[in-house]
Length: 263
Ligand SMILES: [Zn+2]
Ligand SMILES: [Zn+2]
Image (cartoon, rainbow, N blue to C red; front, side, top):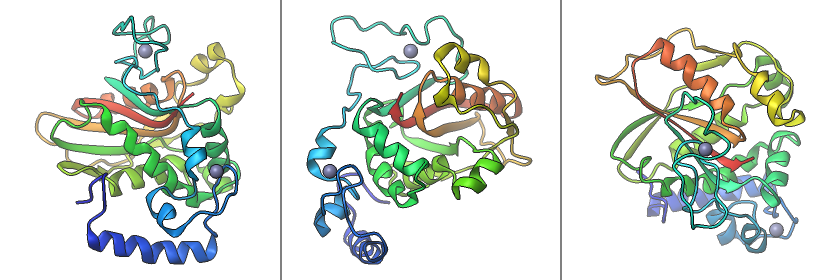
């Protein structure tokens, strides 16, 4: 299994070969500022230069223990925050890697709306940041569940960004953590793009949007440990809706959610 800190020698060679192939199709330029990247940089953090990486703001160690919202300052550490304190979320907890404002937002836009699928590799590296949460690192297995995209939207885009991220998460699993990709959900209804709505509308915009996949594998004794994956978590409503659907159809030990950005 690969580690975060460094790929084993074989993995490194494969990464180099893969890089040569991908670099042939997509010249290694920073996706934020288009600066050319060295081959070594491209292997470590694909499609992002060092200054642009420095412009991203990690959520860090101070965040809501339920919905993952970052806190400003470190003096007060409530267990729940203003975003989720008055709501029942069906997830146990969420962890995001970076704050959504600024450079990260532009990158996600290029990935999703400019359909730059190869940026999944960059987001996979950025997602490594979520493993700072000790609850995710508890030994054992997780089933990795991408938030599904409606068939129509997926046809337009050519891919589901959350599935691409889930694949990267599994591929880069830290040592000792067993991740298996399980697309357990489907999206049954097309909804307004969340990004166009304000918070109140967003909270009302979901409901009956997700359904369980028609079949799911046998759940291990004690229940499944599920890790939902999305590109951006904003209020946490989407991942909570996904979790609620899964709780209805299978025995659950734990459901967490991870995202690259916190909107
Ligand atoms: Zn750059
Ligand atoms: Zn919260």
